[in-house]
Each structure stands twice: as structure tokens, then as C-alpha cells.
Length: 451
Ligand code: GDL
Image (cartoon, rainbow, N blue to C red; front, top):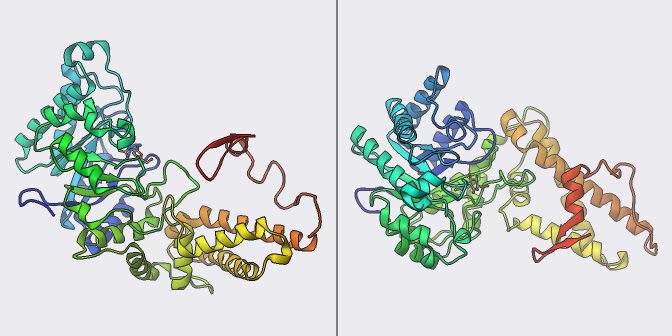
């Protein structure tokens, strides 16, 4: 899976937009990583203001102690700590002061104990300034020069340091799915020091699958095994989503083509147990890996976190129903899929042909309403709050379906439309974003329809 000098990195990148995790959550993360047989944590929260927007500024005061303690605890847990910096929003490559600032920042964090580093060039302006263009020609050349420079500096401080690089073209889509023909990636392959790892999210930013061939092709261009920055469980791009499903859509053969996998998961830290545990199962699998089997195992291991302070207690079936409802970006869990299939049939056919689907839907609806109640009574309040908004939304939506079904059953011949005081016009699914959603709805094939 890896050569002898550079171990396969498996773990988590805290690399999402929004509120970074807190020290307590990160400590819990280290325990989960360890228990899952994983070995790495990359610190890259987009909105740690000193990671990206104010990347030049050194950490100060309490920040210093917090970061030092974090690195210490991560390392003490036997995990590789990687500190990442994102200077790309406004760096001037041709300005010696900026090149110094980059090295000085990494040196500061090295001084706090960080053994490994990353320089990230994702989600930044595509063009160079005029002076930079004059000096370097292309963004790839400028980024490689700055990163190589940082690499040399870091290796002087610590000969065993590993350095990672996130390209601006970090997925197949950004190369118009023509990776072999991409000039930026070719230059990275040519100019970036051979010891530096290159991050990649797969064919897409959020890749449902990562085909082996796509990685073989990339490997040829960047001249090294890529390290996957995996956004499968990331939910920062849509606050209504949450991913409790298993690591999936990557064959075991793929591992041999990679330098590692770092999962960038849900913003809600507590919601990441299954994603992390199943990534561990995948990374450590010997002969086979089944996402669903890994999911069943992980939900069982997660169950003890769901102790209740109240009378209503979560069962394993409850945890799995919840996980099935918030599974993966384009895949529903078994029970959610059944529920949606049934509901679709009920909505599209007259009440006299509803048959068993109605009873099944009503039963699942009751279980979903109960799920919400049970979550509110959890002893682990952080877990409760991480899940809260999502379970609230689904139980309300299911309640709306129930009201509609009752109305439809009682009015089988009507051509009227259902309206409800409870789900009121302009309040239920109101606000600019929801109104725009209705103006421009998306169909099952992903095409937008103006309304
Ligand atoms: C991205 C960002 C990441 C974000 C993710 C999901 C990379 C390399 N960068 O493009 O910070 O969390 O999408 O929205 O993935």
C-alpha cells in the first residue's frame, strides 16, 4: 500500500468552510482516529482566520497555547499532525516579503511542535498579478516555486517533515475531465519537488466514485501517487445535508495507487463517527470492503454515544434509520430509499391503489417523529445539537406528508390543491433562497427548469 519511507496517510482533514472545531472536539477526533486504525490529522479550517484570510499573521496569545496543545495531543495519540496554510487569496509571489512570511509562518508552527506541513492553493483567483506573471509565467510555476521554497525551509528545520501541496486544479472537473492534456497539472508534475505530495479530490469536488483509471491517468501527469482529499462526507456546501453513511465508491485496488486519504467531513463534528470509522475499515481492509457491512458495524459501535437522560432511548434500529436518512451525497440508506419510493408512489397514484405503501410510510413517519424526540433527550448534548436541525426538518416534512395523505384520502375526487394553516404560505420554506429554489427548480436529471 505504501513504500517504506512514506507511510500511507489515512485520516481526517479539517478543511471545510465555516466554524472550525473546538479543542475538545479535536481531542475526541484523535481518539476516534486511533480507534479506527487511522494515522493522520490535517489542520486546515478555511475559517481559522490565520490559516487563509490573514495567513501572514503569526498566532498570538492564547492561540499559541491552543495550537501547541493540539499538536502535542495529536502526536501523543500516535497520529501525524499536518499544519496547512492557504496563502493563495492574496500572496504576491514576486514579493520577497511574502515569500518570507510564508516560511516564517510555517517556522512558527514548527516551533509549536508541528512535524508536517501543507501549502494549499485551492479556491483562489486563477490569474497571477502582472508582476507575478512577468516573473513566473503561470500560476503552476509560481505556486511550485513558493512551495518548493517552503519545502526546503521546512526540511532544514526538520529533515523528516512531510510536505503536501493542494493544486488549484484539484479535481477532474477543473481540468475539463482531460487530465492528461492539462498544462497546469503537467507543470506541477514537472516543477514540484518530487518529495512533495499532491492532493486531489477525484473526478469531482464531491466524488461519488473515484475510478482506478482516473487516478492512474493523474499519476502519470503529476509523476507521483496522489493523496486524496476526500469530500465525500463534507456538507459545508449545503446546510440541509448531513452525511452519516459509510465510506463508499472507492475500490480496494485504488489504495495501491494513492499516497493516502484524508476525509474532509461534516462541519458538525459529532456527526462524523461513521465516516471516520468506515474510512478506517476501508484503509485497513485486507481482502474486501463492503460499505454497507462497514456501516452496520460502525452504527453499532456508535450506539453507546446515544445514552439518554430521559425516558426515550435510541435503539440500534433508530441510529440506523437516522443514518439511512442522512446517508451519502447521491445515495440514500436502505430505509430512506424505501420510504421515498413508497411516498413517490402515494403522491403519484390515486388513494384506491395505495395498498401497503401507505402503512409502511405511516410506520416510518412515526419512527422519524420519535427519532426527533429521542435526540432531544440525549446525555451528549453536543451530539444532540449536531443532529437537531436535521431531525427537526425531516420530522416536520414527514408531518406535512402525513397531512397531505390524510387530505388526499378524504378527498379522492377533488381537483383542488391542499393548503394548511400549519405549513403556512410564505413561512414554510420561505425566504429568498427557498423562493429562488422554486423559481429555478432542478429535475431528476439535474437540469434546471424556470418556473
Ligand atoms: C472544496 C474545498 C473544501 C470544501 C469542499 C466542500 C477542497 C480542496 N477545497 O472545494 O475546503 O470543504 O470543497 O465544499 O476540497
